[in-house]
Image (cartoon, rainbow, N blue to C red):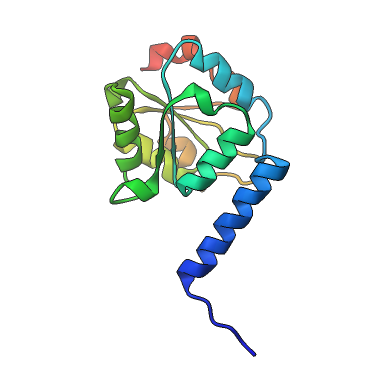
Length: 160
């Protein structure tokens, strides 16, 4: 017969499957991203501010070997309103102990760009070729970069 599952049960199953996949096969990699994070982390405090559930964020950064580089990890689950509201970015800045206006956000989505701008942060859009950002993302960003390895804190410091 047909089994009806609640939305929460379905979400729990999806999250558990993603966690397992990240633990066993690793999270999807954006070429140059791990290196860019390591380079930036040598000079600056770093945070993750994501719409994903915390368990997925932790599984992903754990599988990529960069978990120890982040001073703050924030999920939209922890704030009243997700992206494009600025809440998740403002909480990340607060946990890092930094002024939001001195932060550089690296984003690949329209909602993420809008959230970073609403938080008063400088936003670098790095479009994902596989899933391009919605129309308006380029215009809303402070700067558009072709590749994640172009995220160089020294080069972009003048924007902040």
